[in-house]
Amino acid sequence: MGRRLVPLTLDNLEDLPQRCRSCVFWELDPVRGEAAVKAGTSAGEKEGWLSAVLLDWGSCGRVVQVDDVPVGFVLYAPPDYVPRSTAFPTSPISPDAVQLITAFILPEYQGQGLGRVMVQTVAKDLLRRNFKAIEAFGDARWTEPACLLPADHLLAVGFKTVRPHPTHPRLRLELRTTLSWKEDVEMALDRLLGAVQKEPVLRPL
Image 1 (cartoon, rainbow, N blue to C red):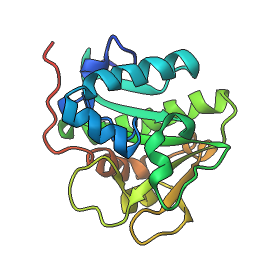
Image 2: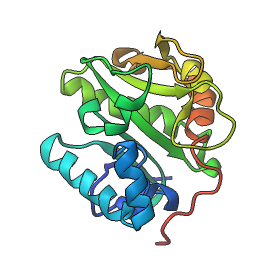
Image 3: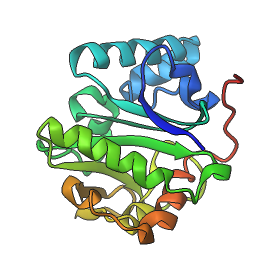
């Protein structure tokens, strides 16, 4: 089985699950996001956001490929590029951290260590850029796939609560700890990354 983690670019944006390709929950503030959805322009807004971040900050995501088939992805960026983050009661993200926006692995590819490799790859990328941690807004009342990751799953893979909240706690993962992860976190990562979407539809190859 050949597996690769390739940078997310405009060329492979369509490798993301169908619903994620045009989702602008994080990429726009609540007012602009709702307007884009109503106007049917969210896909273009998503492309514009990705283009701007790539030009200004650099790589902000990874696509996981197994035998050249896209099976998952992770998206991350400093909070200045994530307008929705300011809408949360536990904001802001710490200045030494990058926000974990969202992540996903197809159910049939879970349990193969892809989640661990994916997060470790992101950690190495961010350490090279002198960041110390990844932070995320968790959903403490998560019941179904959505744009936020479930808080209990984030805790299960090593995140620590830095600002508690009954609904949207802010959690933090020190990047250096991810580089020494053992296989015992693999099942927890699978649950975390598999919780983003129930029925993804990937672009046929």
